[in-house]
Amino acid sequence: MTARRRFYKTVTTTNDFGIALDGRTVKTPSKAPLLLPTRALAEAVAAEWDAQGEKIDPASMLFTKLANTAIDRVRPLRANIVAEVLDYANSDLVCYRADSPDDLVKRHAAAWDPVVDWARTALDAPFAVTTGIIHKPQPEAALRAYEVAMAGLNDFELSAHHTLMSLSGSALIAMMLARRAISAEAAWTAVHVDEDFQIEQWGEDEEASVRRAARHTEFLGASRFLALCRD
View 1 (cartoon, helix red, strand yellow):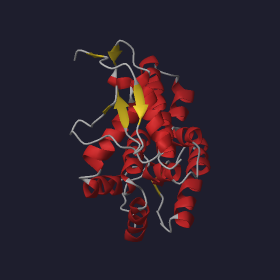
View 2 (cartoon, rainbow, N blue to C red):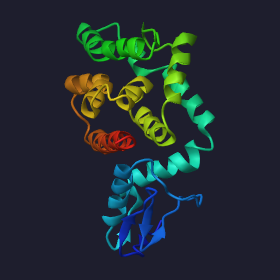
View 3 (cartoon, one colour):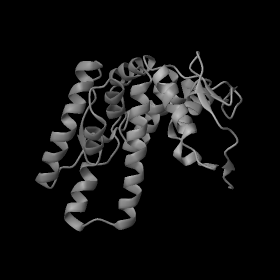
View 4 (cartoon, rainbow, N blue to C red):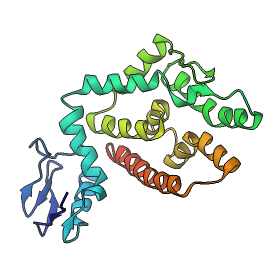
């Protein structure tokens, strides 16, 4: 796809937390006004537009993408998005543990037990832990409690939450980020226990390293977007 040339000179934010290019309000792909929930997030989205050079690079505009998704996809299809997240939570990464070797077993416990414990105390969600990779459905009480927690997220937060969950494989860690119960870097480290263990054993693949770096950048960006939704 040919990059679109920059067609505007000035970028400003509006009183209703929208973005204006040369005074004209930016709209989403579905033609809805791009209105953000906070001034801080509006300014961050405006900065993405202002940072564009001669040509517009959509890949460099993660905040705009997440905001568009919140308005065009999450808002009208929220029940579907919630169902997708619950499916993830029903087979969450942190609930499936290795039974060997001992070093990996200990690393899983150290990184993931605090996540499961947090869900039980902060969300009243009793997620169960198992060994192996065979699917074990989570208790209905855990999924109901998680659904209640999602109801407290606005559409923009849920957009970022879904992205963080997809990048990490863990709905529980995504919710910890939403509740500011874990830092983005600590979350990233926690979801890569298996991968880091394999790298220690067999070495690092260069192409995989490049892909991981790209995902890391997106993960940190989505985490910041999530934080700015309430700042």
